[in-house]
Image (cartoon, rainbow, N blue to C red; front, side, top):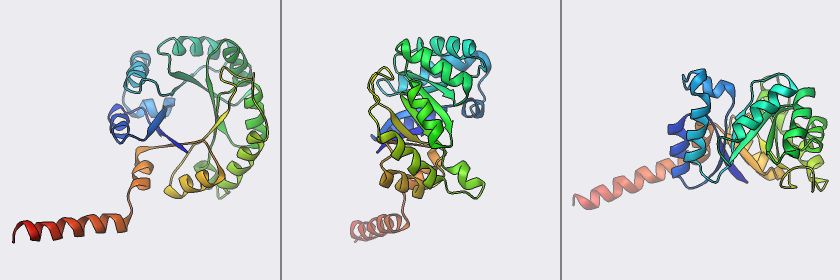
Length: 226
């Protein structure tokens, strides 16, 4: 399973990339707002992320609500860098815009997926990536992992050749809150997990590892000072 980082923070992206395991970036309007950036700086900021992650997919989300607006945003954002993927919400306008953009050779990440039927519609409309949410299900006391399992089974049942520019649909596990979400997604066969830096660090650290490193350092310090 590949790791994407879910952030618009350039420092977090650079740190994750330095670990050597980053395969992409996802952003959204809320994540960009957290950077404190202005509206006029949004597209230059997406260009900076795309340049920092050259060759890796970077999802930039439209804020339009109509088909024409989504298509116009998508074409403009896709023109910023060859690795930018257009992120669209699953809705009537989003599906129509997805089909138009995909037919024009632009890769789309369909987001806010909460059901297998939404995922199937998105894949048929030409989505290159599908982002089912896990954590937000858990927030309302439902099982996000079981919903993810349904999405994965349905999507992997079919050949998506000819539906999008690459003829492949990859599932991005989104709204990841814990390391266990990552583990369960990987066990189910999700292609990607997109995680905030906080969750990515949870995947890296383990109390026994941290204790072991501390013990090694303490023992070596005694050797060095003997």
